[in-house]
Structure formats: C-alpha cells, structure tokens
Length: 233
Image (tube, rainbow, N blue to C red; front, side):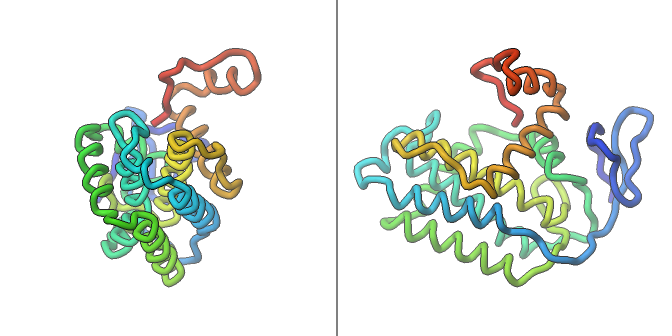
C-alpha cells in the first residue's frame, strides 16, 4: 500500500518514504514497537472531565460552539477518547500516514461539517442522564487501553498511522475543544501545559505546512494579527 501527501515537513520522512517530482511524498513503512507517551493526552483528558463536571445542570442545552449545544460539544469531546479505543482494535499492516500533521492535511480533503455535526449531536445524546460519569468512563477506558499497548499501526479514517502519531491528534482535539467548553461555560480558558505543548506545536506545524507560517510568526512577534476566521485545521 502506498500513500500520497503533500511534502513540506522539515527533516524528510522515515524508511522508504520519498518525495516525487510533483512534490508528493510516496512510500510505505512498517511500525516499530516501543512505548507511547500519554502524558499530554492524560492531562487533556483529565482536564475536559473536570470542565464537564463543573457544568451546571441547566447549561447542558445552552449554546456552545456554532450549532452545538454544550451537550453536543461534550459528545464531540468524548469521541476524542472513544476513537483511541476503537482504532486500537483496528490494527493496520502498513503506515500510510507519515505524521500527526498529515492526518489533518489528509482529513481536510474529505471532511463533511454536517456529518461532524450529526455525529456530535448523536454522541451528546448518548452521554445519557449522567454525561460526566459517561465522559469519565470514556477517559478511563482510553487510558486503560493505552496502558496495555506499545506503539503500533492503527487504522484511521485517512489511513494507517502509528499510534504515537495518532494520539497527539486526540490531545489536540481535547485541548482545543476544552477551551471551547471553558469559554461556553464561563470557566478559566486554560489547558494543562503537557497538552498545550503538543497542541501548539502541532498547530504551528500545520500553519507552516499550509503556507501560513509567516502570518503566524508575525502575529507571535507582535508584527501583525491574524484574521478572526483564520484556522490551520
């Protein structure tokens, strides 16, 4: 199996991965074993559970983000936990997605916002009468699964990728949507530093890969601002 993705990651790619004449990366490799760092993921997961626990009963149906209610947003957050367990149960033979950033670059080609909204609403409804307990159980199952596995190739919607590359996408989702939840419910807009390192590093790489590196660099050094609708995902 081969994969194709726009090049641009500094330092090249591992194994048999090469850049062809059209600027695409092609090739395939197999995953090595080894431990997977879960510190950022665990910190982000604990944080969103704590945020959910602070939601007042009357706030669960309040607006949160776009068309999402607080319940739908928390349902979407829960999917960042459940997909870890789901994808660990779906091993792949070959790595076809070379990096964490490439997951988002590839996903952007076919993402359906309306489908995401429907899944989030369904996930919110499935949180049941005690959404905090359900979310905590999702976190616990994900951490339990991670505690009993080494690095491996898992099947994701965009192809096979190393667990060590996929897990930071979950940390990123938890960090970003944790901020959304905090803002929607009047809580402090903060992210645990272990998760923040991963999320900001990934966002910076995505900015560079998408051709927005200079815009971000100007903003971070006080030389400009980004538009209100600017996004790297």
